[in-house]
Image (cartoon, rainbow, N blue to C red; front, side):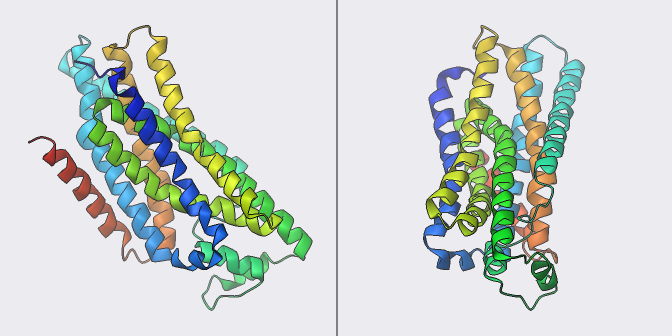
Length: 302
């Protein structure tokens, strides 16, 4: 039997909660001392864990579901496997196109690979003793121009993160329709890596404008893009006129598999390795994420 919209309410709820997790990171602007807790190893560990969850569930749960649904639609095994694979690579290509648009909007990418406390240090004109310190100093401008630059960075980051949050919302929604356990676990992984994203939006806006509320609000806006992805998935399903359409679900599950693979390969792991260039925690935490996802799936097979 194909998944149906019976779990739609739960699916929307878990996606909204994942999107709202950007507010956790953004809330740090109300207590700047908390920024220093967001160290590079901690951020790398969180991103690695999230990547492990997403990669495992993509290959172990969602791709097989796409293939099975194509078979139930009436295709033989060979054709079902072909079309499920085609949908996976279509999803990967879609995210690459979206990533290209994001990089056009966010050419500086100052927020990537910088821990939040380093953004704070740059704003205050402080220097680091690391090799990255000259790069921070090079960006030092007059106070007015520096504030303007920080504001632009924050706005670009908010828009870029909002765009790439759309497929995450779609993935969380479709995953929950298939299996609430999978969807909830996946959304927890998405929520974990949304927290530093909220920081990356809120801090530049706060330091540029002096308004904690503005920093928090823009970060919250970027998180609201995830429910947009869920609404998009719901609209595609309802647009067929059949809640039980095997083909529609099969295509969506295949595309979502590709989206999640590329989110991991193109976003989570590269950024984690910028925070953790010697790979002390990233891969280990990725394996832990896979193990947690595998354990949750095993428990619900009993």
